[in-house]
Length: 135
Image (cartoon, rainbow, N blue to C red; front, top):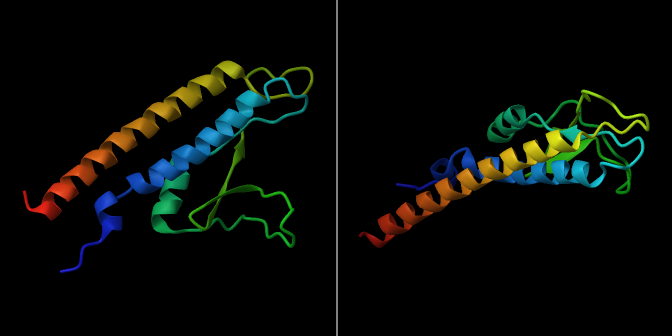
């Protein structure tokens, strides 16, 4: 009988990678809170997780012809996932759409959910190790 780690880890393996990418996006937003005309970006985590789990690539992904072209999204496990612009509640005069309180709250929530996935996977790995040892 063949053992499949992808099935054992389930959705959490994709969730951790996507949460890490989302943390990068949110940290970039926070770092550019005072940059004129900077547009806050985020990702639809639920949709991205579904795409990653099903192995679906985005049909809206732009094709680049040079390695220095700017991407319209992020790449995760060989797949292209779209990033979205956040609609500001109160845009600033300089065109910046980053609301530092919203970004910090989203970052914190994302970090907590990442830690939950880490705890779950570490427990799963511990139980797999116990099963392999035959204890």
